[in-house]
Image 1 (cartoon, rainbow, N blue to C red):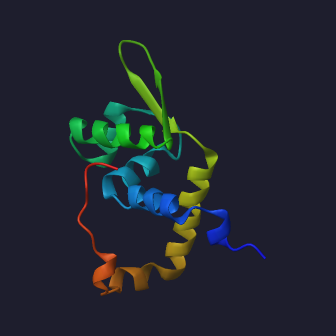
Image 2 (spheres, helix red, strand yellow):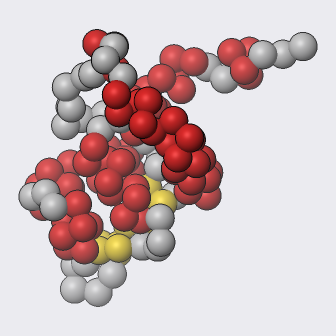
Length: 119
């Protein structure tokens, strides 16, 4: 019987989850769950600088997690590129409803990491 490790390249999966572990990138994706947004809307929702949000959007776009489209007057609209990203975020919400308290209280040093601006 095939295991998940046989079906998924765990190194690539680890990079995906590392990319999602950044608070700003996760906030951006959460902002996009309900539909596409302009950069200025994302900046306001995330509460970060435009340059920081733009860098994280570039990372998410390069990884294929968000898509962009040009709008009028040099505006750019961003959206989640694949429905699986929404499904993953919804699954994370359900999992956190069950385990969030334990995750929050976890004292393992392996659960802490410094946020990185790049992917």
